[in-house]
Image (tube, rainbow, N blue to C red; front, top):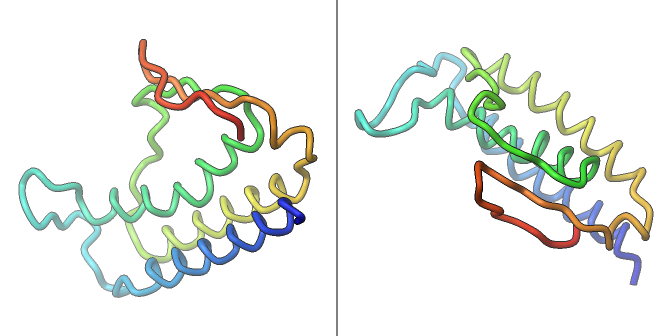
Length: 124
C-alpha cells in the first residue's frame, strides 16, 4: 500500500468536493448575509471552508506545531471570485507540500495548540 499515493488521491477528491461547493455560491451572493444574528456571515463561513483545504493542510504538512490565536484568521472574502482565487492558490500550495512529503515525515508528530489547550497531538 502506498500511503502517499492514497493520501494525494483522497486530498484531490476532497478538494474537488470543496471546489464544487464553493462554485455553487451564486456570483451575486451577499457575502455579509447571515441567516441569524448569531450565525457566521456567508463570506466568513465560505472562507473558513476554503481555508480548511488549503491553509489547514499546509500547516499540518509543513509545521510540527501550530500555535493558533485569533489574529491568524484570514479576512473574509468579499466576493465569489476572491474566494475561488484564494482557494486555488492555497490548494496549490498544499498539493506541492503533500507531494514533497516523505515516509519519515508522515510518522512525525504534529501539535495543534490554542492558548493553554492542546487540541491535537498526533502523527501527521
